[in-house]
Amino acid sequence: MTLHEKHMHRIALVNSSVTEEEHEMRRIELSAWRDGVRDAGRSLNYIRADLEDDTNRPMVAGVWIDWKPKEAPESGGLPEDFDGVVPRG
Image (cartoon, rainbow, N blue to C red; front, side, top):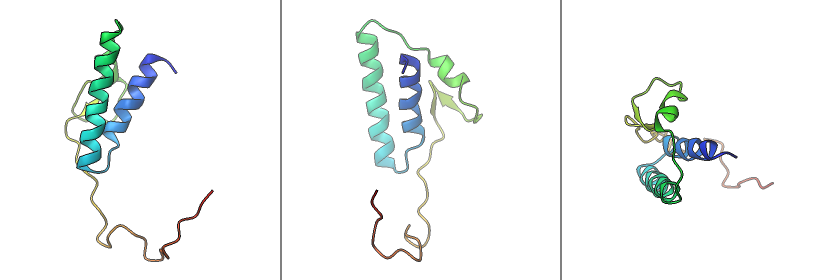
């Protein structure tokens, strides 16, 4: 995986966050990772990150600035037929 691909993957983790807590954690991780890349003498193309996102959403360096947490379904988030058993495998 190239450095750019790793960068885009980390951006995707931020943008696909479900909760406020997850989003904040992913944003902090992305920021720390970017700092590490810079400290290692490498550079990232933040404009390329914006250009590769085809959602037409407002963003800064690939991260959506209009991100909102996903709303939980009215049923509490579990399917009506959920029996409490999570399949393994």
